[in-house]
Length: 176
Image (cartoon, rainbow, N blue to C red; front, side):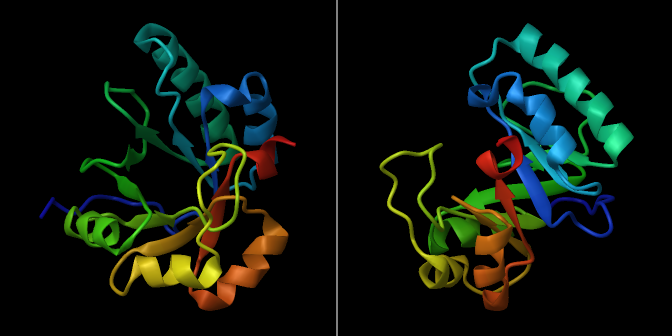
């Protein structure tokens, strides 16, 4: 078990999942994300030097807007508030698609579980959506804040909230 760490209080309930597909829309998405929200900085395919520079810019905006930023992927990125999909420091977030992955994430000490894909999404064309109930069942029981992911927006979040989801993560909902 990893050592306890400072995590944001409260844990964000609205998250932006970044990727290269956002392009310059990243800045609009960061501004549209509610204050106190969270950012999962992915940009897996960006060369490391450019990735670090982009991350520094994202962190500057995040600090001004009181956003939590977690980094995904390899490489040390200074200024992160936590890690995504790996045991690390600060808030630890994890994407899960089934019960086995949920168990693994909880054993790793994840604070936040992104349960995906709930609805069809442009970022993963062809991926079969679980629907709200199957997604909730895949998460199982146990520790970790559940965040709905996959085709989410405020309207769809109102549908899944009664199932125990604390919030949602999106790309398109923040970048449109």
